[in-house]
Amino acid sequence: MSTPSPLAVFRCDASTAIGMGHVKRCLSLAQALRLLGARSHFVTRQTDIAVGALISSAGFGCSTLPAIAVTSAHPAFHDETAHAQWLGTTQAQDAEDTVIALNGEDLPKPCWLVADHYGLAANWHGQMRAALGCRVAAIDDLADRPLDVDLLIDHNLHADHQRKYASCIQARTRVLGGPRYALLAPSYAHLRPARIKETVGSIGIFMGGVDSADLSSLALRACREDAGFQGSVEIAATSASPHLQSLRALVDSSPDTRLSIDQPDLTEFFARHDLQIGAGGGATWERCCAGAPMLLLKAAENQHVVLQELTVQGAARCLKDSEVATVASVGQAVAQLLIDGPARKILAERARALVDGLGAQRVAIAMTLDHLLLRPAKADDASLSFSWRNDQSTRQQSRDAGEINPEHHRQWWKDSLVNPNRRIFFGCLGSRDVGVLRLDFRGSEAEVSIYLDPAMTGLGLGPRILLAAQRWALEHTTLERLVATILPGNRASLRAFSSAGFVREENGWVWAVSPSQPFSQPAFPGA
Image 1 (cartoon, rainbow, N blue to C red):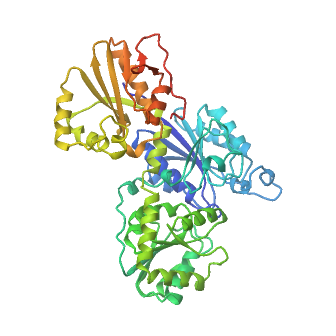
Image 2: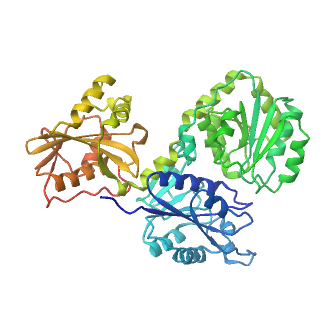
Image 3: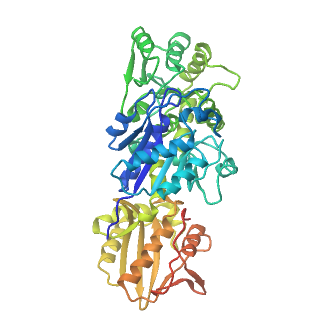
């Protein structure tokens, strides 16, 4: 049985003041949701940067709210958020405008409303939840205002995200924090890290979608004038840059330098250069995923903490806190990196260790758990199941922790599919397989075994697959019990089976298969 495609609505803006990052990371999450069978629709306000075409080109619908001229007398100046002016109006008015815009579209009721805007806070979240009757998520990194949300995503580095947002969120709010949840485009999931060369042959410069401070020109001059770099330089920019004309003139006067405008995807740009220079915004995590040694400059105050943490972890080279970004200071930093190959290699390795390109998929999975379904396993699933089952993290939690012989597994898989006393399923979200469920029948009971895609643990998949197993047992069998054996140290499985209503008995964990047995529906956010 199929279920209707879930809908996520995104509320985000872009402008010269705001930048493009909020829209870009929302697009990455929307693309990940689409891979799981979900639909997305965007709501943006008209500003000095038109993003409707960008959103439409990615295959998503977009409703545009009318522009508002903000003056010092406007109520937005007296709103509760530090970035109220970015919203252009009050939160109440924006919520009303958003609801009217959505009502004008032929859309089903959304499952999620995702807000990525520093000007939106708890009042807006509550008003929209009441109007739409859906869960609310926020993408944030400031922790500077109250947030009335079910899910919070902050993909920046921080020692303790729960503590960071302690005064901003409610007890029910699930926090997905850190670069493990970096919202990158799907292409980054398959990106191979760049090979670090002893000599820097080319430098890539990208200072964000707007670059209102024209750091691109500063970086180019630093490379040529102070660092004396004679190799190839490529600058990535967008047509939204207010300095595009002067930047183009500077590039034209610099030998072996090119300007790339409005590249739809920077994946290859970050991978093809031996050194990257950029601002400390969302593109930082793209550089990390590409395994690119990087020098980062602070383009906004909220980037300070990120640059500081990356410096501490040895994943990026940054200017000292006391240093101002000038042609001389940046040139000196570039010159040091040009002559220090081992340092560039360490930077690249530590950066890549932070980001694997699957962050948007993880967030999308956490948002669509309610739509998990089971499909019967097939013969050509043997390789995928082997890669998951033989992963070290899976074997450590199994009764037999030894490595599995691939030939033995293929034969076992083939035999299992025709074994009348065994059923194997894949848990899936849309067309994305996320875990394996096995039922071994013994008379009136069946032993349950599950293992997940090792890259997708900790998202709440275990309880959802168990819930699907319970429903399947009720609908398709006359079983009396589902049983499981869990190693004492396997805390994740203990939490999963317990939250699914399994009760610990002398010989294992048991769930009675009975129409009168209540399901222990895992409350979002599942553990």
